[in-house]
Image (cartoon, rainbow, N blue to C red):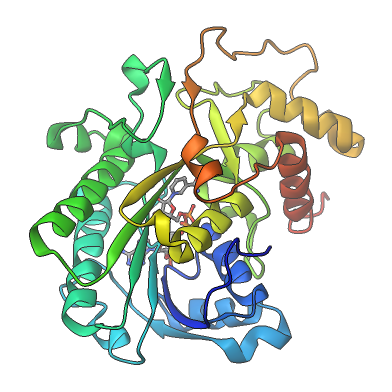
Length: 346
Ligand code: NDP
């Protein structure tokens, strides 16, 4: 990866460093040789996993700090005082299906985590020039009533009551946290500017050092489940989201949104194409014939809707210079990374 413009060396705070998307952002930041990174993790074990996961020659450029819970007021104060950071990339936010308490488990960390880090940067990090926040297309899309063509002007229509229904909690958490970030920028007028990445479902290689496939990130689950034979009898419905993007494109979008001057004060809809579970299965069958028996039958009906909503990713291509990875490449690379961790059959 090369940045479209040469930027001076900088110090980056990367939150949620143990996460799937963050692991790829870290790779890009370190590969470029221009950045030193402090990542946050929820425990020492996860912090060490981050360091172990990077190439040996990069280890001196990355360190970690434990931030156990981003919902706690002032959670980022200590780390932000460590060094004069130039950029902050805030990816940390819950993304899983284990919702017990919507407020405590999702809404608090998403919303208070986002406003908390913005307040802390304003109060303690005068050197920060830009904050990049990982929002989601979930903050834009209306699955019950899809737009014909989505772009950055779209916002989901959700209420706090919707958020109490576990089926909608995640997308509400992304909506409310992104709204809160933009409101902060208007009301607080901080010394830094903001760029937001609204990517859709990410597929792509899982992060190095993951202990097992059960601890794998949520958006790759459907590929994992296909590979492990969990959809052999019955393919799961693809709905409600039929768009995907490769995690490496998403990671690059964060790095470019961080450094390209024109990217400030913007959100970016980062989306590579359409997919269905049947299309994923077909690609896996073609490239990995050794696991064909674990896949749904080849004549399974494709549930891809004829009138599927369209997307306009012009801004991400023009401003960030993204060139999107194709579905076949992304799925093949994802499956390879999963097979490396697949338990051997008895
Ligand atoms: P991961 O679950 O892999 O990463 C989430 C990260 O956030 C982890 O490091 C996690 O730590 C940390 N985190 C979660 N809750 C807390 C908390 N309360 N306190 C401190 N840290 C916390 O998911 P992804 O990499 O997929 O997602 C990263 C971001 O990207 C999220 O904001 C997600 O909403 C967004 N996103 C993801 C998409 C996708 O398809 N993957 C699409 C669009 C947006 P730990 O693992 O220790 O819990």
